[in-house]
Image (cartoon, rainbow, N blue to C red; front, side, top):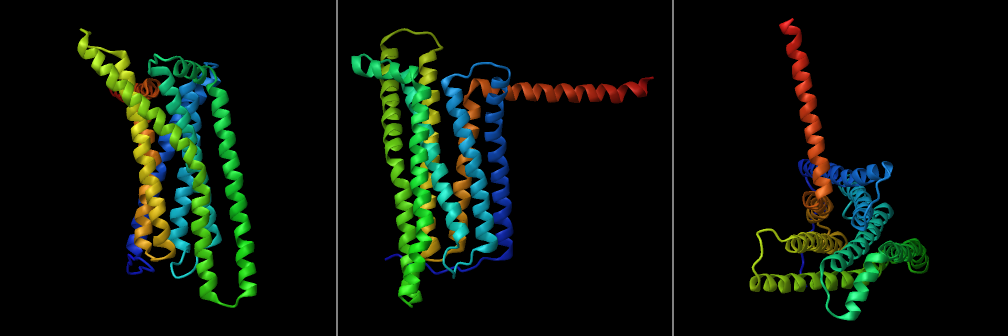
Length: 331
């Protein structure tokens, strides 16, 4: 079995660097995801209808804001309060449980977004996929509500499991006066909770992978069709395929990195007691929501337009200030 030397504590400089990095990642993630939320919310205020893609991005960004806040709390709890020689505190377990819930909700929303891209971009030739794509386009809001309902059910199950855990631990302490045995039971309960809370990720993962695979196959078929035909330099269908695949592949990569980092952090916490390794894992987990939000903004025409408008407004304000500074000198 792989064994690592326990690192029960880290230097003061390492803690400060870790907290500084966590605050920077939190600030970038909050700014990027809050920008997506505010742009779409402002459209709602102006009574401009949001399309299905905007609604999905709005919901996804809200869950990302929650994720960023939880990861900052996780970093503070780990750096300042959690002692590696002690069992995991109740607060730290609560933060990890809420992170798993929010991460699973973001996966459900990403799966809905992937199905929407698939139904809008892919040109189906068979009857059943054609009717299914038409149903997704027409009933996307209902599908989004069903996904949120399943996410709420998984949340209720995870919270029930979390709040029922301390009772079983106390019972075992009363019946058996063996500290080491009770510590092992607590570790097994935490592993079980992690697996239990992530079982609900299987259906959205399958839907996400299948729809993303259909998009990739459709892109290959479209490119073969392009080779056999003489087309202009601009191909909107090809651009839509590539843009959607970039969004989905980037989400998949960030999600896998975040999930693997969370999975690795658990044995680092409860078995190997390696605080430095856990800090690296949390830093990777915090970088994923902000990184994907930046990709979403760069690839979305409406969000890019909002940034360009803001930059133009700032440049105009700077020019006005310069004019006001020059005018008194000339008078």
